[in-house]
Length: 616
Image: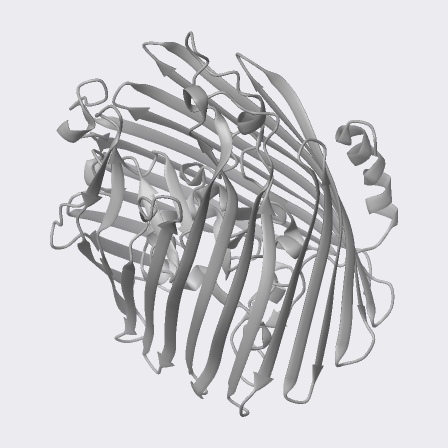
């Protein structure tokens, strides 16, 4: 594996076409219920399919039905209702968005789409503004470290997105406030042993001013900041026989978003080849090769700032069941990242092997994971995770876990030359990986066949946090932070009523200064209701109460610490079937016209209404 991974991927193609594998479960498999009526299958937590009731971690699964119940227009509107997640956004739907899990940094959250790592190789974060919600079939959120199976970035958790692959042909049109227009359409079908799915979407909005006067004279501009998104996803697969399935997944997303002093164009493209095969009734094998392109260009009065990233990745995994009680996963991974800008053109690579052993006998469930990574610039890192669960009764399981994780420095943190006469905000080749330790205790209980209650307490210590605070704000390993919290989740299907309640209590602290981390609330409560009045009419409501957060006023020099006020949001929805295949949806957002900020000096949407007409 010395050469460019593009060569490795070319070499992997015949391997994929001749070999066999068990890909992480398909979307169709992922929405099955457990035999005892348990929750849906988790495929992300331990790189294999298992009931969330038996997963020794805090896991949430969002289905297409959940998305359509609240008639959400934006992926962030779905994520913000989940426990443990907080959001920061610098303007409207097309603007820069950060997602934090359990107080961790946005680049300490691993984001996977159709099995492909999609964060930028230069910034380390995923651009949530690029992805259209119309393309999404399923979202799985795993809270807590998963580096022992996925490697770098999975300190706070993992979010895996599955694009739509199994659905009836459909067309959807939408219109709403700020002259927001949406169009999406898709087709999926089986032809002999082949399955094809294609989904396209587009969104355009006049938007609103991203900033207000608090942003300062060099940033604030009262004009509207429009955005335009386009996306397409394609899936082709073939079931060769009872044991072998192979296919390709392709996505392309473009986003052009104005901000008050310029415009940013971003582009995300992914291609992945896979094959699933059952070598025997107990032995499954997976091979996946992927290529990701993630580009952005910001244009302002200072000129253009392009950043282009390429990622090639190859993953091979075996899953063997020794018995109904014991199974083992062994895998290998190679990843190459390349980043290019006006100032640098650099590559880094990472090689890894990993394993997981699970044993469930009687009331006791044990799970052990370990991984070894060799990073071309940050050196070697070994991470591990151990979890134990015990069935207190047939309905209640308690678990405890300990895990280590790391985040390798990204290309910007290593190589960015800085700007100005002092090369401010330059990278540093001597950076160490950020590292963490997490302890968690949780409980899961089935109150009844259709009611679930979960609670977890966690504490995470992160060391060697990379910050731009060295001489001339150079990147250095400077900070240590503590993250601890309590999360409670309740879900119920009570006949015609679906109900979800989430409570998140969080304390974050920079150990050196004693200050809490910016843009993370100490408390958040969300409530989601959906009620079927009859077979044709469904109404919904989602509400959230978020406490105050600290932020920085960058209009001052040096930046001053400020407070973002607490806020409450109330949204309503209606879905009305007109005919068997035609429906009308209405979403009313921010009913109380709350004035709030997710980042200091940046605006958020006012009271809004959005109408959708769908044929499926």
